[in-house]
Length: 308
Image (cartoon, one colour):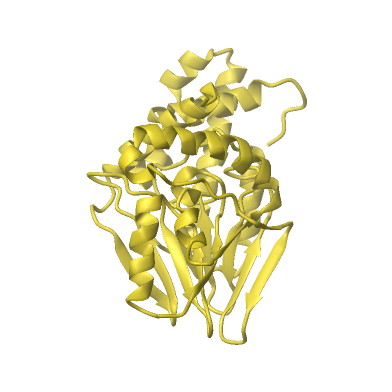
């Protein structure tokens, strides 16, 4: 049985991705960001094909960043095989959402180990399982006959892959997009794969988030010497992507807080909210991000001391 909350979250995600696709390129591209470090930007129109991904070729193996949907995982494996015959030994799921993790089985059957942050384990085993069951019905051609694969290697705050040639640090900095978000940091190159802790455009889903903590996580990422940001959705860029993502949550929270202070209801906030910066960044009106507004309104209306 699919829990109502999971079904609602899935519908919100579809809406967010459909809106963001209006401004996104209609193709999937693969860029070699540094020697043997690849960023795969996913197509989002006319069909949303999943998350952005990365893969890093070490001396003796390949590490994949985010598994994506099952069908896309097959495409990524084919792309890797065009570049190297080294075994795909590890897959890092930045979080449990289906567009980042439902393709795990495609790598496991090749002998890969799936890695994720330990706080995401209960999310994989509940919401992840339910979401996969729902996709088996709604996307039967792609999901039919497949079994859900939960990560088998969990880490707390840091897990390092280093063979002297490549170094990838998997880092957990706090509750952001989900309670178990983690990022992949390549300090030798200044490259950061963020998963959905940072996106570039109108792609944010906040249903599993803590936006106050998320802002702190983004601040910690800004403090790193990041040269290139490979976001979970949208185009690759520089550290300004982190700044834009952080600014959205700061201005969203400030706008909602002011409206609550004026005594506005949630429906009134949805009508009155105006964040010009968001329109400049994404091409979308802030008030169109109804799921984001609802989530922040609930956060800021909850009992307890107000913090910013």
